[in-house]
Amino acid sequence: MVEKLKARFANPLIIAAFVCAVFIYSGFVKSPLTPPFYVPARMESVTSLCGTVASNASVVSSGKYYSVMLCADSATAAVSQTDIQLCARGKIKLLVPSKIAEAVYPGKLYSLSNKSVLLESGEKIACSGKWLSSSGMFLVKEAASLGHSPGLKGKILRFRSLCRLALKRLLFSWGDAGGLVLSLLSGSREYVNKSVGDDFKLAGLSHVLALSGMHLSFFAGLTGGSGRRVFGKRYLLFARLAGILFFVWFAGLSPSLFRALLCSLLTLLCSAVFCGPVDSLAVLGASFLVHTVAVPSDVHSAAFMLSYGALAGILLAADCLSCFVRWFLPVPIADSLSASVGAQTATIPVSISLFGMFMPVGIIASVAVTPAVSVFLTVSVAAVLLCLLMPFLSYPFGAIIRLIYAVICGMVRFFAMVPPVEIT
Image (tube, rainbow, N blue to C red):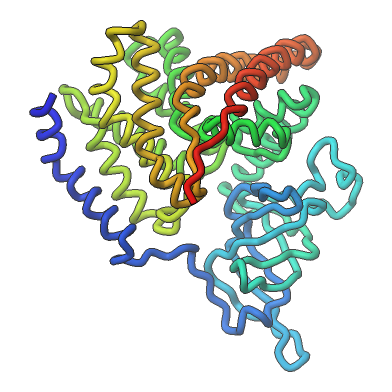
Protein backbone atom coordinates (compact mmCIF):
# COMPACT_ATOMS: atom_id res chain seq x y z
CA MET A 1 0.00 0.00 0.00
CA VAL A 2 2.83 2.41 0.91
CA GLU A 3 4.70 1.63 -2.31
CA LYS A 4 1.52 2.21 -4.28
CA LEU A 5 1.03 5.63 -2.69
CA LYS A 6 4.67 6.55 -3.37
CA ALA A 7 4.29 5.60 -7.02
CA ARG A 8 1.10 7.63 -7.34
CA PHE A 9 2.60 10.76 -5.81
CA ALA A 10 5.60 10.47 -8.14
CA ASN A 11 3.28 10.98 -11.11
CA PRO A 12 4.11 14.34 -12.77
CA LEU A 13 0.42 15.16 -13.33
CA ILE A 14 -0.35 14.77 -9.63
CA ILE A 15 2.72 16.81 -8.66
CA ALA A 16 1.83 19.56 -11.14
CA ALA A 17 -1.78 19.71 -9.92
CA PHE A 18 -0.66 19.88 -6.28
CA VAL A 19 1.83 22.68 -6.97
CA CYS A 20 -0.79 24.57 -9.00
CA ALA A 21 -3.32 24.28 -6.16
CA VAL A 22 -0.78 25.53 -3.61
CA PHE A 23 0.07 28.56 -5.75
CA ILE A 24 -3.59 29.43 -6.37
CA TYR A 25 -5.03 28.98 -2.88
CA SER A 26 -2.06 30.52 -1.09
CA GLY A 27 -2.77 33.71 -3.02
CA PHE A 28 0.60 33.67 -4.79
CA VAL A 29 -1.14 33.48 -8.17
CA LYS A 30 -4.24 35.58 -8.75
CA SER A 31 -7.02 34.17 -10.88
CA PRO A 32 -10.00 36.19 -12.17
CA LEU A 33 -13.08 35.88 -10.00
CA THR A 34 -15.41 36.56 -12.92
CA PRO A 35 -15.00 36.56 -16.72
CA PRO A 36 -13.79 40.00 -17.92
CA PHE A 37 -16.34 42.53 -19.14
CA TYR A 38 -15.39 45.64 -21.08
CA VAL A 39 -17.42 48.74 -21.92
CA PRO A 40 -15.94 52.21 -22.71
CA ALA A 41 -17.79 53.91 -19.85
CA ARG A 42 -18.10 53.81 -16.09
CA MET A 43 -20.22 50.83 -15.05
CA GLU A 44 -22.36 53.07 -12.84
CA SER A 45 -23.50 54.95 -15.97
CA VAL A 46 -24.65 51.83 -17.86
CA THR A 47 -28.45 51.68 -18.05
CA SER A 48 -29.10 48.85 -20.52
CA LEU A 49 -27.41 45.83 -22.08
CA CYS A 50 -27.98 43.64 -25.13
CA GLY A 51 -26.44 40.25 -25.68
CA THR A 52 -26.75 36.48 -25.64
CA VAL A 53 -27.52 34.41 -22.56
CA ALA A 54 -24.46 32.27 -21.81
CA SER A 55 -25.59 30.09 -18.90
CA ASN A 56 -28.58 28.53 -17.22
CA ALA A 57 -30.54 30.81 -14.91
CA SER A 58 -30.10 29.76 -11.28
CA VAL A 59 -32.27 30.96 -8.43
CA VAL A 60 -30.48 32.70 -5.55
CA SER A 61 -31.00 31.67 -1.93
CA SER A 62 -33.70 34.30 -1.26
CA GLY A 63 -35.81 33.07 -4.19
CA LYS A 64 -36.47 36.65 -5.31
CA TYR A 65 -33.89 36.75 -8.08
CA TYR A 66 -32.14 34.58 -10.65
CA SER A 67 -28.52 34.96 -11.68
CA VAL A 68 -27.46 34.38 -15.27
CA MET A 69 -24.39 35.17 -17.39
CA LEU A 70 -24.82 37.47 -20.40
CA CYS A 71 -22.35 37.64 -23.28
CA ALA A 72 -22.82 41.33 -24.07
CA ASP A 73 -22.81 42.84 -27.57
CA SER A 74 -23.79 46.43 -26.82
CA ALA A 75 -24.67 48.74 -23.96
CA THR A 76 -26.33 52.08 -23.33
CA ALA A 77 -24.76 54.55 -20.92
CA ALA A 78 -26.14 57.82 -19.57
CA VAL A 79 -23.43 60.47 -19.98
CA SER A 80 -24.31 64.10 -19.19
CA GLN A 81 -28.03 63.25 -19.31
CA THR A 82 -27.60 61.80 -22.81
CA ASP A 83 -27.96 58.13 -23.71
CA ILE A 84 -25.01 56.86 -25.72
CA GLN A 85 -24.89 53.54 -27.57
CA LEU A 86 -21.63 51.70 -26.88
CA CYS A 87 -20.00 48.45 -27.91
CA ALA A 88 -19.53 45.92 -25.11
CA ARG A 89 -17.45 42.78 -24.91
CA GLY A 90 -17.16 39.94 -22.43
CA LYS A 91 -19.50 38.36 -19.94
CA ILE A 92 -21.43 40.01 -17.13
CA LYS A 93 -23.62 38.46 -14.46
CA LEU A 94 -27.24 39.61 -14.40
CA LEU A 95 -29.52 39.61 -11.37
CA VAL A 96 -33.00 39.07 -12.79
CA PRO A 97 -36.22 39.39 -10.71
CA SER A 98 -38.20 36.18 -10.39
CA LYS A 99 -41.27 37.70 -12.05
CA ILE A 100 -39.22 38.10 -15.25
CA ALA A 101 -37.24 34.84 -15.11
CA GLU A 102 -40.30 32.72 -14.30
CA ALA A 103 -42.61 34.32 -16.86
CA VAL A 104 -42.68 31.19 -19.03
CA TYR A 105 -42.46 28.61 -16.23
CA PRO A 106 -45.48 26.40 -15.48
CA GLY A 107 -47.51 27.17 -12.38
CA LYS A 108 -46.48 30.83 -12.22
CA LEU A 109 -48.91 33.74 -12.36
CA TYR A 110 -46.40 35.62 -14.49
CA SER A 111 -46.90 33.11 -17.32
CA LEU A 112 -49.91 35.18 -18.45
CA SER A 113 -47.60 38.04 -19.38
CA ASN A 114 -47.11 38.83 -23.06
CA LYS A 115 -43.54 40.01 -22.50
CA SER A 116 -42.02 36.69 -21.50
CA VAL A 117 -38.27 36.15 -21.73
CA LEU A 118 -36.70 32.71 -21.89
CA LEU A 119 -33.42 32.79 -19.93
CA GLU A 120 -31.62 29.87 -21.55
CA SER A 121 -28.27 29.60 -23.33
CA GLY A 122 -28.36 31.01 -26.85
CA GLU A 123 -31.33 33.34 -26.30
CA LYS A 124 -30.73 36.99 -27.21
CA ILE A 125 -32.18 39.55 -24.81
CA ALA A 126 -32.20 43.28 -24.10
CA CYS A 127 -32.45 44.46 -20.51
CA SER A 128 -32.43 47.72 -18.60
CA GLY A 129 -31.39 48.31 -15.03
CA LYS A 130 -28.41 49.46 -13.01
CA TRP A 131 -24.97 48.30 -11.91
CA LEU A 132 -24.57 46.99 -8.36
CA SER A 133 -21.00 47.75 -7.39
CA SER A 134 -21.35 45.91 -4.08
CA SER A 135 -22.03 42.54 -5.72
CA GLY A 136 -20.48 43.10 -9.15
CA MET A 137 -23.76 42.31 -10.94
CA PHE A 138 -26.21 44.17 -13.17
CA LEU A 139 -29.67 44.41 -11.59
CA VAL A 140 -32.33 43.98 -14.27
CA LYS A 141 -35.57 45.96 -14.04
CA GLU A 142 -37.05 45.17 -17.46
CA ALA A 143 -36.15 42.63 -20.13
CA ALA A 144 -37.27 41.80 -23.66
CA SER A 145 -36.58 38.87 -25.94
CA LEU A 146 -34.68 39.43 -29.20
CA GLY A 147 -35.07 35.88 -30.48
CA HIS A 148 -32.29 33.32 -30.58
CA SER A 149 -28.78 33.25 -31.99
CA PRO A 150 -28.57 32.91 -35.78
CA GLY A 151 -27.24 29.90 -37.61
CA LEU A 152 -27.23 26.19 -36.86
CA LYS A 153 -25.78 26.66 -33.38
CA GLY A 154 -28.58 29.04 -32.47
CA LYS A 155 -31.22 26.59 -33.69
CA ILE A 156 -29.67 23.77 -31.66
CA LEU A 157 -29.59 25.93 -28.54
CA ARG A 158 -33.18 27.00 -29.19
CA PHE A 159 -34.20 23.35 -29.40
CA ARG A 160 -32.39 22.70 -26.10
CA SER A 161 -34.20 25.62 -24.45
CA LEU A 162 -37.61 24.36 -25.57
CA CYS A 163 -36.77 20.81 -24.42
CA ARG A 164 -35.81 22.07 -20.96
CA LEU A 165 -39.02 24.10 -20.79
CA ALA A 166 -41.10 21.09 -21.89
CA LEU A 167 -39.44 18.97 -19.19
CA LYS A 168 -40.35 21.57 -16.56
CA ARG A 169 -43.97 21.54 -17.69
CA LEU A 170 -44.14 17.74 -17.55
CA LEU A 171 -42.52 17.47 -14.12
CA PHE A 172 -44.64 20.29 -12.69
CA SER A 173 -47.62 17.91 -12.68
CA TRP A 174 -45.71 15.66 -10.25
CA GLY A 175 -45.54 18.35 -7.56
CA ASP A 176 -42.56 18.54 -5.21
CA ALA A 177 -41.34 15.16 -6.43
CA GLY A 178 -41.13 16.59 -9.94
CA GLY A 179 -39.10 19.49 -8.57
CA LEU A 180 -36.48 17.07 -7.23
CA VAL A 181 -36.43 15.18 -10.55
CA LEU A 182 -35.91 18.48 -12.38
CA SER A 183 -32.99 19.36 -10.10
CA LEU A 184 -31.35 15.98 -10.69
CA LEU A 185 -31.83 16.04 -14.47
CA SER A 186 -31.20 19.67 -15.38
CA GLY A 187 -29.76 21.42 -12.33
CA SER A 188 -32.77 23.75 -12.06
CA ARG A 189 -33.77 24.12 -8.42
CA GLU A 190 -36.67 26.58 -8.68
CA TYR A 191 -39.24 23.86 -7.95
CA VAL A 192 -37.35 22.12 -5.13
CA ASN A 193 -39.29 22.51 -1.89
CA LYS A 194 -37.35 24.98 0.28
CA SER A 195 -37.62 22.91 3.46
CA VAL A 196 -36.46 19.80 1.58
CA GLY A 197 -33.51 21.71 0.15
CA ASP A 198 -32.57 22.93 3.64
CA ASP A 199 -32.80 19.36 4.96
CA PHE A 200 -30.40 18.15 2.27
CA LYS A 201 -27.90 20.84 3.34
CA LEU A 202 -28.23 20.06 7.06
CA ALA A 203 -27.80 16.35 6.36
CA GLY A 204 -24.56 16.99 4.45
CA LEU A 205 -26.16 15.92 1.17
CA SER A 206 -25.91 19.11 -0.89
CA HIS A 207 -23.81 17.23 -3.44
CA VAL A 208 -26.84 15.08 -4.28
CA LEU A 209 -28.73 18.12 -5.61
CA ALA A 210 -25.69 19.57 -7.39
CA LEU A 211 -24.96 18.15 -10.83
CA SER A 212 -21.77 16.14 -10.48
CA GLY A 213 -20.02 12.91 -11.33
CA MET A 214 -22.79 10.84 -9.74
CA HIS A 215 -25.30 12.07 -12.31
CA LEU A 216 -22.83 11.81 -15.18
CA SER A 217 -21.89 8.25 -14.21
CA PHE A 218 -25.56 7.35 -14.03
CA PHE A 219 -26.26 8.50 -17.58
CA ALA A 220 -23.02 7.02 -18.91
CA GLY A 221 -23.97 3.67 -17.39
CA LEU A 222 -27.55 3.95 -18.64
CA THR A 223 -26.58 4.70 -22.24
CA GLY A 224 -23.66 2.29 -22.10
CA GLY A 225 -25.87 -0.58 -20.98
CA SER A 226 -28.51 0.23 -23.57
CA GLY A 227 -25.93 0.62 -26.33
CA ARG A 228 -24.29 -2.67 -25.42
CA ARG A 229 -27.59 -4.54 -25.71
CA VAL A 230 -28.53 -2.89 -29.00
CA PHE A 231 -25.20 -2.54 -30.82
CA GLY A 232 -22.92 -4.94 -28.95
CA LYS A 233 -19.84 -4.55 -26.76
CA ARG A 234 -17.84 -3.07 -29.64
CA TYR A 235 -19.73 0.22 -29.44
CA LEU A 236 -19.87 0.46 -25.64
CA LEU A 237 -17.32 3.29 -25.54
CA PHE A 238 -19.25 5.37 -28.08
CA ALA A 239 -22.55 4.79 -26.27
CA ARG A 240 -21.08 6.01 -22.98
CA LEU A 241 -19.52 9.01 -24.68
CA ALA A 242 -22.86 9.88 -26.30
CA GLY A 243 -24.64 9.67 -22.94
CA ILE A 244 -22.05 11.89 -21.25
CA LEU A 245 -22.10 14.56 -23.95
CA PHE A 246 -25.90 14.59 -24.21
CA PHE A 247 -26.36 15.03 -20.45
CA VAL A 248 -23.79 17.84 -20.26
CA TRP A 249 -25.34 19.54 -23.31
CA PHE A 250 -28.83 19.35 -21.82
CA ALA A 251 -27.99 20.21 -18.20
CA GLY A 252 -25.35 22.87 -18.89
CA LEU A 253 -21.88 23.19 -17.41
CA SER A 254 -21.35 23.87 -13.72
CA PRO A 255 -17.91 23.65 -12.04
CA SER A 256 -18.64 20.21 -10.57
CA LEU A 257 -20.17 18.90 -13.80
CA PHE A 258 -17.28 20.23 -15.89
CA ARG A 259 -14.88 18.40 -13.56
CA ALA A 260 -16.88 15.22 -14.02
CA LEU A 261 -16.92 15.73 -17.80
CA LEU A 262 -13.14 16.19 -17.98
CA CYS A 263 -12.50 13.14 -15.79
CA SER A 264 -14.90 11.02 -17.84
CA LEU A 265 -13.44 12.08 -21.19
CA LEU A 266 -9.87 11.51 -20.03
CA THR A 267 -10.77 8.11 -18.58
CA LEU A 268 -12.50 7.03 -21.78
CA LEU A 269 -9.55 8.27 -23.84
CA CYS A 270 -7.04 6.39 -21.68
CA SER A 271 -9.17 3.24 -21.79
CA ALA A 272 -9.24 3.39 -25.58
CA VAL A 273 -5.51 4.09 -25.99
CA PHE A 274 -3.84 2.14 -23.16
CA CYS A 275 -4.25 -1.51 -22.24
CA GLY A 276 -3.31 -1.16 -18.57
CA PRO A 277 -5.37 0.24 -15.69
CA VAL A 278 -5.94 3.99 -15.53
CA ASP A 279 -4.67 5.93 -12.50
CA SER A 280 -7.78 7.84 -11.39
CA LEU A 281 -5.76 10.27 -9.26
CA ALA A 282 -3.60 11.19 -12.27
CA VAL A 283 -6.78 11.72 -14.30
CA LEU A 284 -8.10 14.01 -11.56
CA GLY A 285 -4.82 15.95 -11.58
CA ALA A 286 -4.96 16.38 -15.35
CA SER A 287 -8.60 17.50 -15.11
CA PHE A 288 -7.66 20.07 -12.45
CA LEU A 289 -4.94 21.54 -14.67
CA VAL A 290 -7.17 21.69 -17.76
CA HIS A 291 -10.10 23.13 -15.78
CA THR A 292 -7.90 25.82 -14.20
CA VAL A 293 -6.66 26.97 -17.60
CA ALA A 294 -10.00 26.66 -19.42
CA VAL A 295 -12.24 28.32 -16.80
CA PRO A 296 -10.01 30.17 -14.30
CA SER A 297 -13.01 31.95 -12.77
CA ASP A 298 -14.21 28.61 -11.34
CA VAL A 299 -11.24 27.94 -9.06
CA HIS A 300 -12.57 29.97 -6.13
CA SER A 301 -16.16 28.73 -6.33
CA ALA A 302 -17.44 26.43 -3.60
CA ALA A 303 -18.58 23.84 -6.15
CA PHE A 304 -15.09 23.64 -7.68
CA MET A 305 -13.24 23.22 -4.38
CA LEU A 306 -15.73 20.79 -2.87
CA SER A 307 -15.92 18.70 -6.04
CA TYR A 308 -12.17 18.26 -6.49
CA GLY A 309 -11.57 17.91 -2.75
CA ALA A 310 -14.23 15.24 -2.33
CA LEU A 311 -13.01 13.12 -5.25
CA ALA A 312 -9.38 13.46 -4.14
CA GLY A 313 -10.39 12.30 -0.66
CA ILE A 314 -12.23 9.31 -2.11
CA LEU A 315 -9.29 8.28 -4.30
CA LEU A 316 -6.71 8.70 -1.53
CA ALA A 317 -8.54 7.28 1.46
CA ALA A 318 -11.17 4.87 0.15
CA ASP A 319 -8.81 1.96 -0.58
CA CYS A 320 -7.02 2.25 2.77
CA LEU A 321 -10.22 2.54 4.78
CA SER A 322 -12.14 -0.19 2.98
CA CYS A 323 -9.47 -2.77 3.89
CA PHE A 324 -10.35 -2.28 7.56
CA VAL A 325 -14.10 -1.68 7.22
CA ARG A 326 -14.59 -4.88 5.20
CA TRP A 327 -13.81 -6.86 8.34
CA PHE A 328 -17.05 -5.61 9.93
CA LEU A 329 -19.43 -4.81 7.06
CA PRO A 330 -20.46 -6.30 3.70
CA VAL A 331 -18.24 -5.21 0.81
CA PRO A 332 -20.75 -2.86 -0.93
CA ILE A 333 -21.56 -1.03 2.32
CA ALA A 334 -17.89 -0.96 3.36
CA ASP A 335 -16.78 0.56 0.05
CA SER A 336 -19.58 3.14 0.11
CA LEU A 337 -18.83 4.08 3.73
CA SER A 338 -15.10 4.37 3.01
CA ALA A 339 -15.75 6.64 0.03
CA SER A 340 -18.09 8.78 2.12
CA VAL A 341 -15.52 9.11 4.92
CA GLY A 342 -12.82 10.09 2.43
CA ALA A 343 -15.00 12.70 0.73
CA GLN A 344 -16.28 14.25 3.96
CA THR A 345 -12.82 14.34 5.57
CA ALA A 346 -11.18 15.98 2.57
CA THR A 347 -13.83 18.70 2.32
CA ILE A 348 -13.94 19.61 6.03
CA PRO A 349 -11.34 22.44 5.68
CA VAL A 350 -13.23 23.92 2.72
CA SER A 351 -16.59 23.70 4.52
CA ILE A 352 -15.20 25.38 7.62
CA SER A 353 -13.53 28.19 5.66
CA LEU A 354 -16.63 28.88 3.54
CA PHE A 355 -19.53 28.13 5.89
CA GLY A 356 -17.98 27.99 9.37
CA MET A 357 -19.35 24.48 9.94
CA PHE A 358 -19.34 20.91 8.67
CA MET A 359 -21.85 18.06 8.85
CA PRO A 360 -20.29 14.78 10.06
CA VAL A 361 -23.69 13.09 9.75
CA GLY A 362 -23.19 13.31 5.99
CA ILE A 363 -20.87 10.30 6.22
CA ILE A 364 -23.73 7.99 7.20
CA ALA A 365 -26.40 9.93 5.31
CA SER A 366 -24.60 9.51 1.98
CA VAL A 367 -24.43 5.74 2.41
CA ALA A 368 -28.15 5.52 3.18
CA VAL A 369 -29.63 8.14 0.85
CA THR A 370 -27.51 7.87 -2.32
CA PRO A 371 -28.83 4.40 -3.31
CA ALA A 372 -32.40 5.62 -2.81
CA VAL A 373 -31.70 8.66 -4.99
CA SER A 374 -30.23 6.38 -7.68
CA VAL A 375 -33.43 4.31 -7.70
CA PHE A 376 -35.48 7.51 -7.78
CA LEU A 377 -33.46 8.83 -10.72
CA THR A 378 -33.73 5.54 -12.64
CA VAL A 379 -37.50 5.37 -12.25
CA SER A 380 -37.81 9.07 -13.09
CA VAL A 381 -35.87 8.80 -16.35
CA ALA A 382 -37.95 5.80 -17.42
CA ALA A 383 -41.14 7.65 -16.45
CA VAL A 384 -40.17 10.80 -18.36
CA LEU A 385 -39.41 8.84 -21.55
CA LEU A 386 -42.63 6.84 -21.36
CA CYS A 387 -44.76 9.88 -20.50
CA LEU A 388 -43.38 11.81 -23.47
CA LEU A 389 -44.48 8.93 -25.72
CA MET A 390 -47.73 8.18 -23.85
CA PRO A 391 -48.86 11.24 -21.85
CA PHE A 392 -51.75 9.35 -20.22
CA LEU A 393 -49.16 7.48 -18.09
CA SER A 394 -48.19 10.71 -16.32
CA TYR A 395 -50.67 10.22 -13.46
CA PRO A 396 -49.74 6.62 -12.44
CA PHE A 397 -46.02 7.31 -12.80
CA GLY A 398 -46.49 10.50 -10.80
CA ALA A 399 -47.91 8.45 -7.92
CA ILE A 400 -44.90 6.11 -7.98
CA ILE A 401 -42.46 9.02 -8.12
CA ARG A 402 -44.18 10.77 -5.20
CA LEU A 403 -43.99 7.58 -3.10
CA ILE A 404 -40.23 7.20 -3.59
CA TYR A 405 -39.84 10.95 -3.01
CA ALA A 406 -41.64 10.67 0.33
CA VAL A 407 -39.26 7.89 1.43
CA ILE A 408 -36.20 9.96 0.46
CA CYS A 409 -37.53 13.06 2.23
CA GLY A 410 -38.16 11.03 5.38
CA MET A 411 -34.60 9.70 5.37
CA VAL A 412 -33.10 13.13 4.71
CA ARG A 413 -35.24 14.75 7.41
CA PHE A 414 -34.07 12.12 9.91
CA PHE A 415 -30.38 12.84 9.26
CA ALA A 416 -31.01 16.60 9.18
CA MET A 417 -32.03 16.47 12.85
CA VAL A 418 -28.38 15.85 13.79
CA PRO A 419 -26.87 19.29 14.48
CA PRO A 420 -23.79 20.37 12.48
CA VAL A 421 -20.43 21.09 14.09
CA GLU A 422 -19.91 24.85 14.07
CA ILE A 423 -16.44 26.40 14.16
CA THR A 424 -16.38 30.03 15.23
